[in-house]
Amino acid sequence: MLDPLILLALAGVGLLAGFVDAVAGGGGLIGIPALLFVGLPPVAALATHKVQGSCGTAMAVVTYWRRGFIDVRALTLAVLLTLCGSVIGALIVKRLDISVLTALVPIALIAIALYFLFAPNLADTDRHARLPFARFVPLMGFGLGFYDGLFGPGTGSFMTIGFVTLFGLGLIRATGHTKLLNLTSNLAALLVFIPSGDVLWPAALAMAVGQIVGGYIGARTGIRYGARLIRPLVVVVSITLALKLLFFP
Image 1 (cartoon, helix red, strand yellow):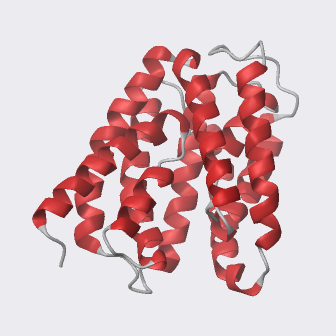
Image 2: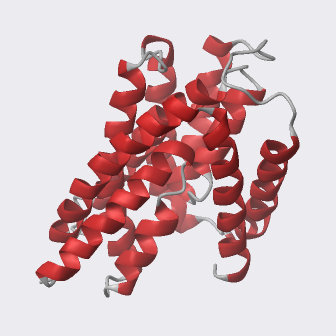
Image 3: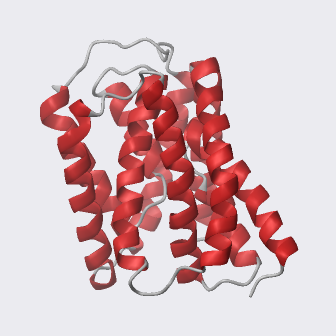
């Protein structure tokens, strides 16, 4: 049983993680190390993080949706395929050698950071889409849902870059749509983790309280400041995640 002061500290960690995740993704960079630090085994830390992270992401989704930045109807098929992809990835992860992803994903994340850093036309307004939204977003959802169930790091960054570069969404709408698909893939993973008894519920619930507050504040902040805040945070999160994978896999 965790000490009440530790649970209080984890709630604070959840608030910070929820804020960062709602704006740019990458809340796991904060939440998972904190859970490992207080003594949870890696699988339990990941499962517990998925529970509390889903609460913060859900709050962010509601906030973006209420402000009109998520078209739930247009994403219905994408949500279903993201769910399917994530479950399939989680079920087969133990049968595959994913070491190649450890080498390739940091390169992709650095490329995303460079794109967000130097691309001159990133803004909050929508632009011309390169691919039909209704046809290809579900395929992106399935592919990245599968990746999230299989490996996971950088999923939010990959989704955001996809919505911006392929489907012409402004950064705020891209972030909102990413949050919905991210929530879907997290819930799919919990279909595997919860029945296995891997979640430490006191820690998950304490962090969930912080996540809900942080997710709300982060979403409102992202909506208010838009590309001015989302753009640099995506760069920082992507580079930090790439460095973690390279030097602390």
